[in-house]
Every structure is written in structure tokens, then in C-alpha cells.
Length: 499
Image (spheres, rainbow, N blue to C red):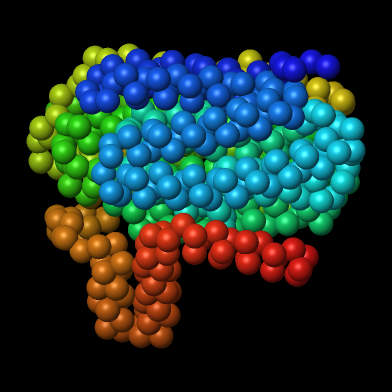
């Protein structure tokens, strides 16, 4: 028996963990000043654990590395030692251990049947084993309703958040689903349940992102939405799986870059609230350019790798393409809001930093591989082809389409810059007050309710208030991880009964 196996799927995830991990360690040289021996020890163990998890063939080794990622994330999230950091670390550990229990139970059942490796346990085709493995994947990847630990984990140092979101921890669940893709094609009840939860995750996280003023929490909800896209793509056949693996690659680089850039802004401006960050383009031009380029890839703008991966998913997951597009369009709105806040306005007070840029620039350059995406498409297609045992290819996008769309975007930006009165009514945009997002939405709802078109505006105001109440409920329930576990288990059980 081979204890470790490196194939197309595992090489993608292991390569991303090692490459992004190395760049995060480089960035840490500038960012981390306290608890450095403990921090670097945990980070290196975290990277090695993720790489070991995806190449482990033996069931016992898989569980060992799975638990090592949980322990390392617990230590890194709570490394600051504050009360909020400790609670966030505890929440992440409690919720992900629910999945660990499911994983251990599934592999133990496989072991009892003579299957001592993960592929052998999956090949048994037992619905119970596959369902338990799906629970493990959902909790590890923070898919709704097991998502609440991920926004709270933003208490971690920024390079930890970058690695955790892009190439480690949450990617473990995506990897597990990719391994089960072929077996789940024969279990429509289980695969449909996972697809429904992933679709709800996309919609829910996209809506919740609108309420975030903390930049790292905004990126966390964006990650939850993107993970949902990957889960859906993995379960729609070989070509869709290739598209999902391509998105795993593109997401790793643009999301890691955005997190590291968020850390630079936090250090230079002393706040994570992007509403209080202004004038970045004037004081930190190189950082501003990197932020814009990474955000363009995150929103799927043509010529970026993010566009290539999302286009591939849209064209190969037809039944739920509208859900994927909803996530992308929502991302376009909240990223535009974020960029509009930080880039312009009064002169900024930050300066470009060499070491962070050395870590960020390679990631940003990869995000613009959408100009020539064929090498990345070939890697993803080869992995999906090996998994399904059939030839797979991803058709490249005609170059004329990206060029036309880029020209349209540039034209729109130039128009908004030249004629701002079109969007502001001729008056300067008001300064952001000290409202919480929910309070601000309620105030807007009150103002809109006095418009002449009362029926439409009252309906719109009611919708905004409902979303505000949802944001309030999320914030309160987040304080109790045990309550989230009970809620998640009950909701999952109800979904299985209905399906």
C-alpha cells in the first residue's frame, strides 16, 4: 500500500499550499513582531499539514494531517491571546471538530470493511460513508450552515488569514469533495443536498458581505461564496470539475493577495474599517495598483484568471449558473464599494512597503494569467481527466471578448470620473457616518419611504430592514459556537428529510 499518492488533484492543492505558504512567510517577516518563534513554528506546521493532507493515501495519515490543520489553525487564530481571539479560535475548533468526528467515523466504517485508504473507502459506495465525508467537507470549508467560524477567524494575523482562505484549511473540504466527485455521481440524493447547501452558501455570503465594513470580514464572506461555487462545480461532471479546479487556482492567488493587501492597509491606517481609509492611490500607488488588479480578478473582469475560471464554470454548470453569476455580480458591487472608499478622497497617510510587495506582486501577476490561461486550464483538465478516467478539455475564451469587455469597463470608469454629477446628483458624495451597517440601511429605508412612489419604496425599505435583521442575528449567534453547531445539525437533518 502506498501511504502517499501524488496525482493531478493532490498536486494542485499541495502546490498551492506550498507556494502561497512561502509567500505568506515572506510577508510575515514584515508583519509579525511578537511571538515569532511560536508563530513561525505553527505556520510551517500548518503548511506541511495541508500538503500532507492532500497527498495522504492511508486513512490514518489522512486523519492525522486533518487534525494537525485544525490544531495549527486553533493556535494561529488565537495567537494574539486576547479574549476575542481565544473565543474565535475555540469556535473554529468546535465546529471543525464536528466534521472531524464525521471523517473519523466514515474512515472507521471503511476500515471495518477492509478499506484502509481514502480512495478504497470512497469506492465502497456506501451512502452513509459518503454522507459523513460530505459533512466533514462542509464543516472544514465553512459551507452554510457551518460557516460561522470563518468570519470570526479574522482575529488571526493577516498572513494566517491569507493562507487559511486561499490554500489551506478551507481548501481541505474542496479537496475531499473533488476526491468523492465520481462516487457522488451515483448518489444523487447526497450530491443534490451538497449542491443546495453550496448554493445557499453563495447567496447568503454574498448578501452578508454587503453589511461588512471590516475589510477582512468582507473577504471572509467572499471566500464562503467562492467555496460554494467550487463545491457545485466539482459535482457537475468532469468538465465542470476541471472548471472548479481552475477556480481553486485563481481564487488562491487573488484571495491571498487581497488579504495581504488588507494587512498593509490595516498597519498603515490603524484600522480594518475600509470606510475610514482614504487616498490610498495618492500615498501608496504601488499597493493601490496591486489591490485594484487583485480585485479585478476576484470580480471576474476579462483578461484575469478569475474571469477564465468563472467563465468556465458558467458554461459548464448550466442549471445553477444563475447562482454562480449572482455571487459574481454581488462581488462586483461590494468590491467596487470597497475600492471607491479607499482609493480616492483626502491624501492618505500610508507608504508602500517593499517586503509586502515582494510577496503580493507574484500573486497579482498570476491573477492576470487570464491573458494566456491555457497552461492553467491544461493542469485543471488533466486532473479532472485522471479523476473521471475520460478525456477533458477546457475551451479557451476568444481573445476578442475580453478586449471588448475591458474597453467597456475602462469607458465606464472614465465616464464616472469625468461626469460624477451623473451619480451624485451634482453634489459631493456625503461622508460616511458612524452608523453600523444595519443602522445605516434602516436610515436609508426611512428616507426612501417618503418618496412619491410609496409602494415601491416601502417594499424596498422592508427588504433592507429584513436584511439588516439577518445581519444582527448573525452577529449575535456568532458569539455561541455550540448554538451554531446545534443549528447547523438541525438544519442539515431537516434538509436531508425534505430531499
